[in-house]
Every structure is written in structure tokens, then in C-alpha cells.
Length: 207
Image (cartoon, rainbow, N blue to C red; front, side, top):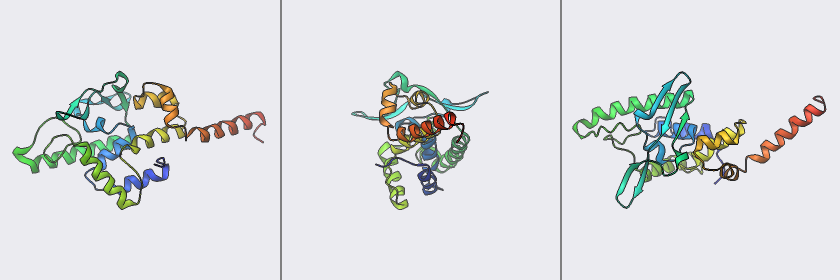
């Protein structure tokens, strides 16, 4: 699959305008979470501090032989604090309003589990259902993009904005920086050229 570019970000967000998955897609795109991580997110894990809003990854939705379960991530580095920029916070506010409407419509069928991205009855989304809806919207928009590509897109955009590979590794919950650099190696030649150009400008006095 081609990497998610800056131009594609706008098209992806436009494709989900008004869609029930719009808040989920926005948060996934702006945080680089694995699909099961936002699906397992609870409101109790969305935090505000003097440094701004963040979400704490402590649970994820997984498919096991027992069915769909919400469980802690297996790797210690996957348990992490992810800062939220303004559009991600706005998406969560939209999701809260959407959940309130769903709760009213569901009535006594509602399951109050404190889940952020809920189904029509308050339970967590089934990963395959979210993926199917995502692919349908992407096909309609003419974009060759899977849900998991949102994670790749977030990392690529961060690296393109000169965020350090070490910081990107921490945000994504990678266990080793070599994994981060290897997975997003398609971005590195561009960054290397920019670094060389800046070095040349310093040595030549901007000529």
C-alpha cells in the first residue's frame, strides 16, 4: 500500500464527514493507535492536565478463541500516554455527543461500559465491522487505504514534521527504534536530503 501523504489526510477526513466512524478515524489518524487500542478506550482513560489533553493506552479490543475481549496490551511499551492535539480533542467531543444520542435511542438495551467508541448499544466495536465500514468509505473515495494505514500515516507525518524517531517510537509503542526506522524507511531519504540541504546552506553562508 502507498504511504498516507499529507494530501491524503484531507481526503480521508472528507470521506468520513458525517459518518458514524468520523471521530474514530480522526483520533486514529492523529495518534497512530493500533486499531484495537481506540476500540478499547474508555472515558476514564482520557485525561486533562496543565500540559493539555492526552489518552492513556491501557486496554485494547482483541479477538480470541473466547470471542471479542478487552484486555491489557501484551507489551509493556504499548501501555503509554499519548498527547492529543486540538482536532483529536474535538473528535472526542463529537463522539461524546454521538454516544449520548445513541444512549437515548437504545433505551434499556444500552450497555454502560464507559467505552468511548461505542456500537449502537454501548458495547465496543467489532474490529472487523469497523474495518469493513472503513474500506467501504475508502473505496467510495477512490483511496487505496486500510484502517491500519492510519497508523502508518500518523508516523510518516510526524517524521516529515521533524519529530524525532525516538519520540515517534514512544508514541507508537514500538519496542525498538530499529522497528520504527525500518517500518518508515521510505520517509528517511526525504529527511536526509533536507538535512544535507540545510548543512550546505550553513557551510556556504546561504548561497
